[in-house]
Length: 108
Image (cartoon, rainbow, N blue to C red; front, side, top):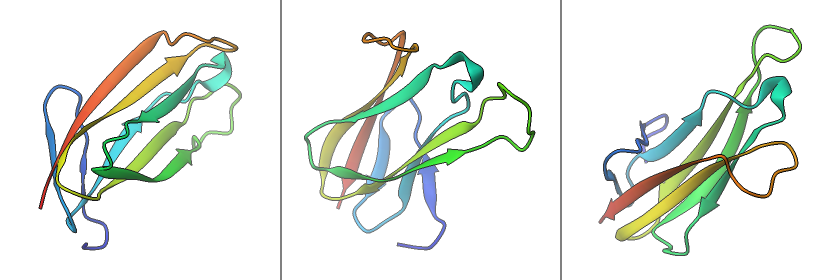
């Protein structure tokens, strides 16, 4: 894999990756700020990709309640198709208020 290469995962189409190729990233711009809402990532059991890293980017402004961003980094493992689910939960909530489903297709 080339250093720094990758694609940004999109919700509305199949995202193609290749084994040994670029990595994939999913970014959520609002990390809750002072609202207490938080995003969670639910990986499937397809085994075609792996979650490599979760990165929290804090805002450059030192003000209370300014939201940051969360970035999830994925890597292709084997050919096939799988899905990743991102869910937004309210503070103390057990049911998500929003869900985003990403389809990943890995080619050899």
